[in-house]
Image (cartoon, rainbow, N blue to C red; front, side, top):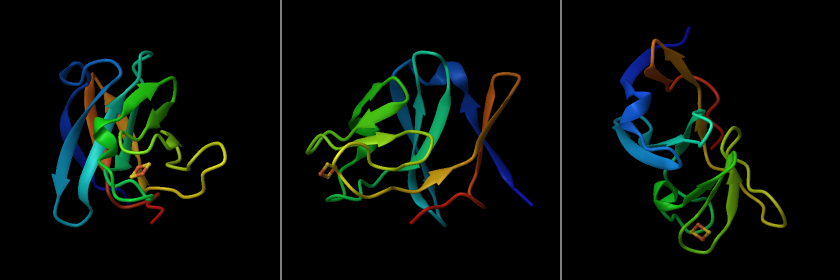
Length: 109
Ligand code: FES
């Protein structure tokens, strides 16, 4: 059974922006909002060399790491293109504009 954590409202995150949620069990989790208001949650540690992907650039449904420009699918955490690797991704649900994060499933790493 999922345990959902309320992490704030959609409008708390700018479009194409992010915020970081600190958790005891899973470390820092980056929450992203796309231009179309989709919300995604990824482990904030790039699988390449540990870059803070929350500081990357959101474009479409992808994020580009700020350190060496690897690009990840926001829904799966998988690297795209020629790069190989993945960062953990977490379920999100939205209810009445509130964002809920689950730490219990979908963790890749
Ligand atoms: S640390 Fe993210 S691409 Fe290198």
